[in-house]
Length: 447
Image (cartoon, helix red, strand yellow):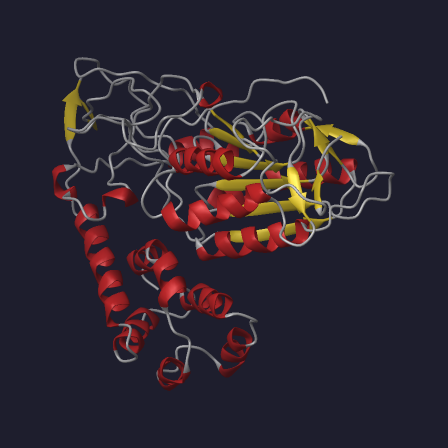
């Protein structure tokens, strides 16, 4: 399938998964057009929910040759889903228009280099959802690269923005990861005019703000989940954590990510899995990475099923630019759903704790903290020193809230804005406040 077709489907994935009615008329057309083999259709139908069936159909569709895209649109148009087909076509048109923007160059000392007008910008653009707390601060730096329209601009005029394209192969091969501040009058240092892999420029538009990380690969990234549920040590089993795992897997699969899962691992196994993963050659082929760690914990400590502990920051630095050159310049998110102490927030103005009852447990059990490197985002489920709640039947309120917000807003705003909204909802409805911390340099759109 053509790369532009893949991108159009990827960027419309949430809407497609949410709205396709997987009934006889649509299924008959899919079968009639022979998009999939009989075996593939059986696997798709075997999924337990409509969302999962549509999600697997979209995953398989991208591997079904050059005619699959138009056949799929035909099936949508003739089964009561014309509005979805039109949305995909419009997205394809926008992507093609962006790709046709000219590359602007200037001659400096006899050599051609990309034109630039780049200055250091604050991490977040001034919009209603960008009121982050101090723990989310990041270096006030910007990197060189190209401008693209972000997913939040779907309904805006994107023709006023120039896409300046650069070849990221140099950085992928060398691991170069130096941030560069530039003004219009500066000369570009020869040899370093290409953007960081996975990164777009931070030049201001007329409304101000940063550029975005360039997420174009299929899959968009890899999500690695480590979920400790059953403990052989004296620690309480984490019943309900399997619900969190299922919600995260389904959401990120719908967003176009590849999913890998490891359940019930000792502390040493956790470290070995992450070390091995940081050297995985497939990381060269994707533009983003998400690691989910769910277990008992305390401050910067996470427990294995054997009761032994590992420092979370040590695990995260396995993926910095020094240790994981495949992900240099690309955004990486670490979702940590574990206690960070025994403290509990007092709820002022309420007579009883909210959403805390007999079936709610905490993931408690810690030590030093080391600085993380560029392009990292750590989404802690709770504030340092405090517990992280979990329910036997419903999973954790943090994961439930995060999934709800990401599904509602991923096509509109970037990750830090969504995590701000998670903070807002958790503070309003639960006796727990999450604590994201970021060294991202640009906006990161999941869709």
